[in-house]
Amino acid sequence: MTISALQKARAQYQPKLPKSLKGAVKLVEGTATESVADQEDIKDLFPNTYGMPIITFEEGTDAEKFSAVNVGVILSGGQAPGGHNVISGIFDGIKKLNADSKLYGFLGGPGGLVDHDYIEITAEYLEAYRNTGGFDIIGSGRTKLEEEAQFDKGLEILKKLDIKALVVIGGDDSNTNACVLAEYYAAKKAGVQVIGCPKTIDGDLKNEMIETSFGFDTAVKVYAELIGNIQRDANSAKKYWHFIKLMGRSASHIGLEAALQTQPNITLISEEVAEKKQTLDEIVEYMASIVIKRAENGDNFGVALIPEGLIEFIPEMKILIGELNDLLAEGTKTAEIFQGVKRSYRREWVAEKISAESAAVFRSLPSGIANQLTLDRDPHGNVQVSLIETEKLLGEMVKAKLAELAEKGEFKGKFGTQYHFFGYEGRCAAPSNFDADYCYSLGTTASVLIGEGKTGYMSSVRNTTSPAEDWIAGGVPITQMMNMERRHGHMKPVIQKALVELDGAPYKYLLANRDKWATETSYLYPGPIQYWGPSEVCDLTTVTLKLEQEAK
Picture 1 (cartoon, rainbow, N blue to C red):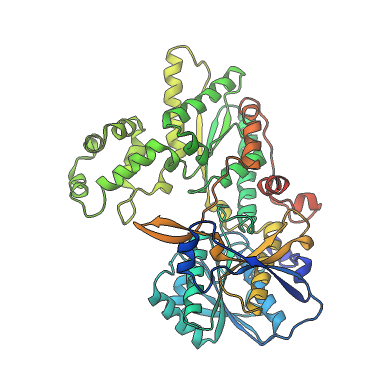
Picture 2: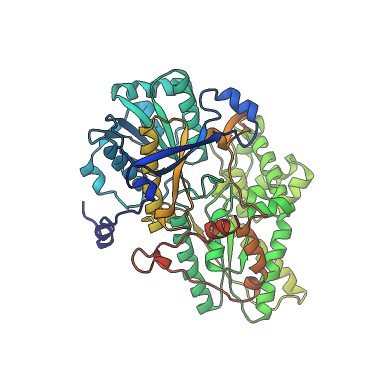
């Protein structure tokens, strides 16, 4: 394998660990836990793994002797920087328990477990992947482990390989599945432990015990560098407004953190839009007002950050999408008729078939966006919201609003646009020092939980704004994070997704500075991720994490 100079140098980096994980480890168990909501329902569904205590690791005195253990690992869902270091931490951790321990990786995500597709991860094989981005060491996938037939099929290969523990590295859905799997194997007395590790660049898997999900730090730093570059360009050319859509369908953590790192002129927060029940027109008017104010100062340029999932948080758009999904659902008569309608008439045909309120919204949309809402559908006939070019929707509507105002003499500036979507650029970046250390600690924590015979736990590493040696490692029962939610028409136990808290310190900081950043050019230019140099530069955490920890 040919590698770059950075890869070669980065391979020599030794991730930092908390003091409690460097030698012998002592486990301290807290009191019994309960789920964040729907306690009786969750308790009934998870009788074998509910109510377990939070576990904290402390420095031990006597090193225990452990039997060799075979462990399986799965990378589940979308990529996030640092996954390879989680696996490195697991590998080194179980080898520390006993040199004869083995690690198996299931290929292509959870499907590899069901299909019995795996490799043994050896020291030689792992070496090329330490401190690197991506999930290419074993690949990932989005197969959901939800059915008993899948659990039983997986158990076959686990028994064949004498695997005593399985680590699922994933987001809220993947760890929900891990929790269900842990309960199923415990109920069957299968002799297989299941441990979860918190992964998602979206940042929406976090709570009191999981301060941040891995990959968020690196991904946002990548986006912040790009945004800073665009801001520098905007401030140099002084002729474009850049509308930037950022990954994050369910929560706006990426957009908020990117804004705190770069200080753009406009930052839309989906949760705020939903809370205020803002209409599409109100959002457009807000953005246009900032364009006008800056133009009056002679600044016909700016940068706006837009969360990927914004459109689903706008009440009128959410209703419209729901009506379109019903109208054009796969297998319905109306969907069949729609395919026979001339393209030039389809927009009006749809408008006549939905409610008057939704029809008014639908007719107000730029034609390209209206077409996307009716044509870009998933196999179930639903709108693929992630494919909707929300940045262009808002840019075109702001342009139309400014044209109206110009005719009335109320806007005398210039308005040119450039559009961007940052998503995949950050998912497989080489992990920052923080993510490299955090992920290695999560993996090592998982190995300790395995050695102690625990199941149904998620690796937890806290106090992460302090130096790594002072981090607090341990385990949190996955059932503690769960509640009941309606999914596909049925109530199901799921890990509660963490949205941006409008009473939280990060959002309040944005709110306190938003008006100043809107009219002034207060741009920050973070630059690329730094791996060597002063700790205050190289080991910097996210602003979100810093503000949240300071507020505790």
